[in-house]
Structures are given as structure tokens and as C-alpha cells.
Length: 118
Image (cartoon, rainbow, N blue to C red; front, side):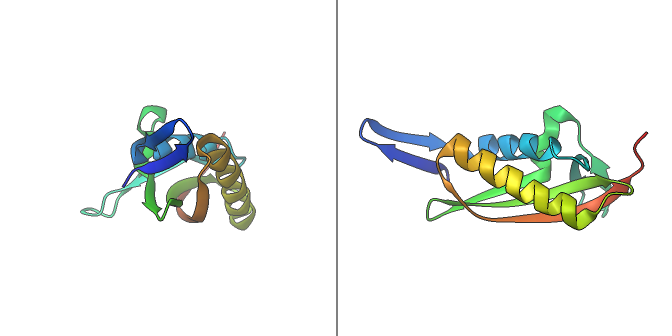
């Protein structure tokens, strides 16, 4: 289902892929996040995604005009995972709500790996 915004001039539909790409971009801006992760269900292998594939680490569902976002991330070694996750949730929630005008119902953060950063 697409996100829907209604106003006095009409209706705007926003595709879930657009929402996922925007949420992924907001996530990688957060301190401690190395990047988004792609998980191969077949092999159980986790890989770091490049910027052009960032939406593959994010899934967005629209239910009753609320957004539910699942994010798969890789964090930097030595940072507090809880602090990074809380910061990510606050940042993504704020930016997505400002961008879309839609309410974020829940954000689930799945830490798929840790990477040593130079």
C-alpha cells in the first residue's frame, strides 16, 4: 500500500520504495551507523550496502496511514549500540514525518553486524 496524503487540492500517493530510500538516507547520517545491511535469507549472509542500494536495508509498511519501518544496520565497533539505535530512531522518525507529513507508528532497528572503522 502506498502512503497517502490528502489536502484541499487533491491526493498525493508516495511509493514505499521512496519512503524506504529516504529513511535509509536519514539512518546513515547518524553517528555510529556504518551503513545499511542486506541479509540473504537463503545463505544467512549479511553484506554492507552501497549508497545506491540503501533502500534494500529498509522495509516500510503503510497501515492506516501510519508508517512502520524495519531497518537493518551495521554499527561501528566501540560505540554503544543502544545509544546509536535510540539516536537513529529519533532522527529517522523526525525526518520521515517532516518529509511526508505522515505519522511513524514504529521503527524496528536490527543490528546485523559490527565493523571496525579506520
